[in-house]
Length: 308
Image 1: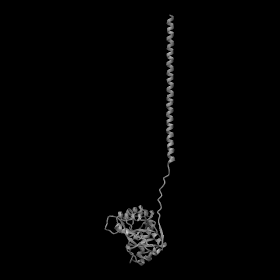
Image 2: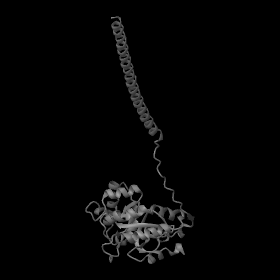
Image 3: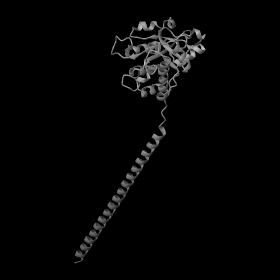
Image 4: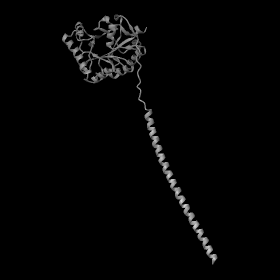
């Protein structure tokens, strides 16, 4: 009997010990899960904060390194001048009409490829393009570039804008465009006012080839006055140009024309007579060099007084 009680007591103690052990193990496991979950949550929070901080740092970094773009400045062209007596100044004024390859046998049309080659040669050989205003000043003062040249276009063909203008810009050259004003804005064959305004803003000269393009020499005084004045008025009202230079249609003029030039405030006028311009010929009868389809050797020979 005693043995049975003792055995029962030992079994009971053993069961209590086992139950207690199980409870302790469960409690520890629960604590481990709690701290593990808490640690994971903390790590997750830390990672998010770290990412936010990194993102913020990156954004701040981008802000710090952004710099204002610096525009490239074109180097100013260095022009060498000489000072001589005004009557010794001699300047080739080139006379172009259309820049077009469609009619190679037309003496008034120079192909764009040839025009580009001619301008490249002038640029590479140190020639300085002059506006007619600068030509006029050279005749007044005697100060002139060592290798001067003026480039003019007669009539105002649209290809002057589409073909010649981009080439002139490429080489940083100036030119003067003489416009038959009554043909402006009429069709696509001649330049329109928007084209003329753009070229003027760039620095090209837009000047008067009269309004109606009839020959001035031999025409009545009032007819001459009308076509010259109407051209001046159009340029002033539509292009914003106070025209001071005139190109005679077909190069024709007479004493009446020259007298009118002075009355209408014209500083100088150009003809189609061949030669370099000089004040010795008179400001209202300046000569020019007609440029027609020609070989480059022929073109280069024009400038031999400056290159030999």
